[in-house]
Image (cartoon, rainbow, N blue to C red; front, top):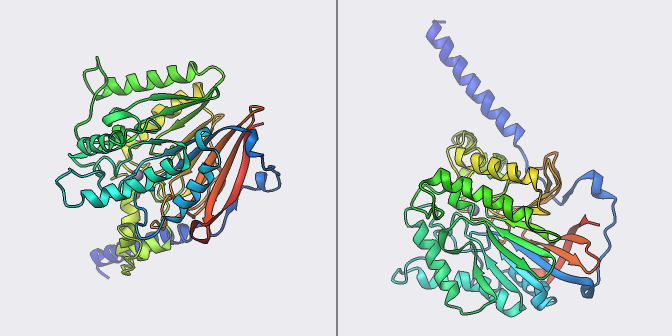
Length: 399
Ligand SMILES: [Zn+2]
C-alpha cells in the first residue's frame, strides 16, 4: 500500500476511535437522584416553619415558562414561598427572558417577552416574598451588541412595576458586587457574571480606564464585602456557576452526539451521527465563552475562587447549567447550581468527586436560616404538574 494511503487510513481509524471513545466516555447522563455516599445515610430532620427566620429561594433559567398553563416549577415555588411571605426572598439567577432578553417596545415580540417575564414577577407578587432578578447571558441579548440595552430594558420594565419588593440586581449592566443585607442574618452579594464574558459595550467602574482595571476593582470590592459581613451568612449569587457537570463543563451524553440540534431545541431529534460528535469536541476546545473551557470564563472563575479561598462565603449559587447540583468546593463553601427553572430544558448531566447531589429535573433550592442560627439547604421539585412538590435532597450547611 502506498504510504499516503496508509497515512490516510490511519487518520480515519484514529478519528473514528477518538469519536467512539468520546461517545463511550460521555455515554449516559445520570438517571434518577444522585446522592454522594457520604451523605446517603445522614438524616436531616424537617423544621417547623415558625423556626425559620429567613428563606432564600434560588431558581435559574426560568425565562421560558409555559404560557398556556402555569409552569409547574413556578407553581411549586409560589406555593412554597407563600408560606413564608415577607420572610422569603426569591432570587432569579438569570436568563429571565429567553432567548434575547427584553426587546424594544416597538418590537413585534415585546408583548410575548413581557408575558414571559410577568410569569416570574407574578410568583413574587402572589407569594408576598421579595424578588431579585439577576441578568444572565440571554438577558444580555444573547451576548449581542444590543446586550447592554436589553438588560437596561428589563431593568426599566421591572422598575415600572413600582413594587419595592421587586428589583433587578446589579442595576443596568453594572458588574456588581451589589450588597443586599436581608434581615439580621443574611448578606446577599450579587454579581453580574455575564459582564465578564460579554464582548460588546458594557459599563466600567467609576474611576477606572479599562476592562482590566474594572475587573481588579470588582474583586477588590468582593473581598471587602465578604470581610465586612460580620455575623451575617454570605450568599453570593451570579448567573454562571464555578463548577458544574453538564454541557457547559464539557459533558455531553449520547443524545448530544447523535442529535446535536437538541442544543437548539430539545425536540429537534434529527440524527447526525459522527458529525454530531464534532459539536461536543469543538465545545470542549473552548470556543464559547459561555462554557467553562472559554478563556474569559476561566479568568472569571479563577478571580472569584481566589477571593473565596481567602474569605469563603456560605455558598456561591448560580444557574446557566440547566441542572440541579450541590457541589463541594476546595474551600469551605458550597457551590449550588439551580438552573432548571422550566420544563422546556432537557440537559445532559453527570457527577464527579465534588458532587453531593445531582438530578436532571426541574426544581429550585432553598436556604433556610433558623432561629437557632442553623442553616438548612433543601432541593424542591414539582410533582403533579406543580400542584404538589417534594423535597428530594436536604443537608445542614451550618449546624
Ligand atoms: Zn445562561
